[in-house]
Length: 83
Image (tube, rainbow, N blue to C red; front, side, top):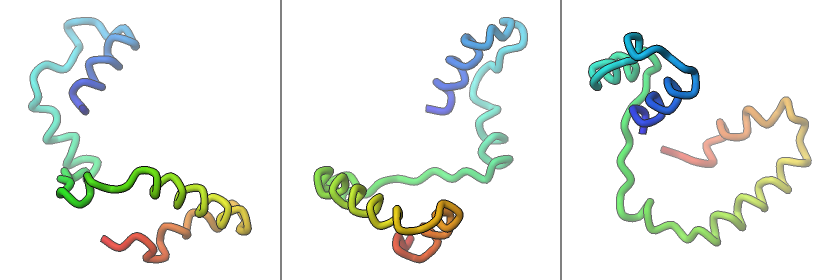
């Protein structure tokens, strides 16, 4: 996906052909620079009930309306979504 996006951005930004990134050697450096990691979804993660996820998302939005926007950043840090 990262490689596909870079091709689209180069085209949108009119990057000259001689300055475009070739191959995929740059991807490893990009991952290290921005401390990205690949994550694979297991069967359980892919089989989530999307309707239940949408309902929970709406419930959380309503819950978060009770708090000031400055406190929203810490909401995800509460351990609600353990890794």
